[in-house]
Image 1 (tube, rainbow, N blue to C red):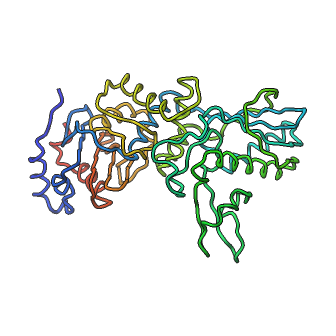
Image 2 (image 1 turned 135 degrees about the vertical axis):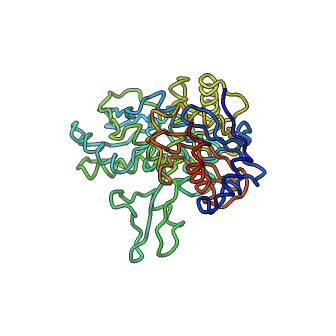
Image 3 (image 1 turned 90 degrees about the horizontal axis):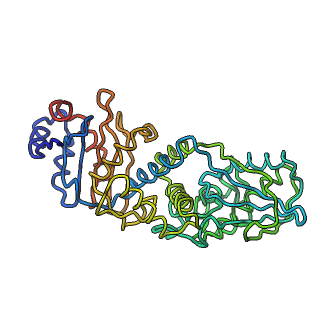
Length: 402
């Protein structure tokens, strides 16, 4: 049976030690009306708790769920694959999208070089097979602004469906030396303010993102000396032979480490869409994402009273409790090192939305990784969550070490 420490006693100890707990962050937390907290020791016994079974909006701590689902299903050494088919009669190079979330410019360079080495010399058209995802699929919270974090998912995607532009001496250029400036990228220049660089997403329509992917692929193939026509077509691969399968150079573990560090919403949503498409053997869609996530979590943890509508945490309809996040963190231990160190000996994923501030991860004490989950669904100072975690790490020995 879990041992629960009385919250008022802990606060009394903290308040009585001003030299150690100068900010009194836990004292501030105790005054909040819409917040929950749970920390357990190395044996899973409660150290500190408040509203631990109340469901809150998790924001980007949702990515812990997504990461666990992906790592459990594919394994940390998984590499996404993208198939290329060649219609030798029409000289159409077909690309069958697999939802690979990490086809960045550097990867497209490798891909183009490998296609050339496979004997590709001329392409009259690039064909896009996006049937792995439902047409125009979006998930809650995406596509609402032109900001990079609102990029919509797509079966074929380049650079997280974002474009980085700038002007040099009045001339529009790519802000990334490795990324060619394509016609679609140029069409976004109207959003660029004078004398500034700008990173924007490719728009609310996934078809635009896929078109941008084809333009970049063509540009990289031309750099390799392949003759490429300007035609881009859409459909499903039929009368073409498999020409090349590209295995992404980054492993799933590397992708998730980046997702946790930079809180990449696009990457998280690509993962849950791909997971659901594999599970149900049909094009990925919004309903199946929710069904997949909730079904897997219910089956594994026997959870009740929770909601998961996307993999990034952008939906304000998502609900998790601190105790559920602790369950998840206990299961996530094999991959705990993929979390960023946000403070000394604190490895965690944060979440931020309007009037939402969350943090969940591990506090390392005597080489023991102790899970904690903090959820505040009201306006608070930005760094309060970090200060609370630091105070949790300094709790008196008798409270958090047995």
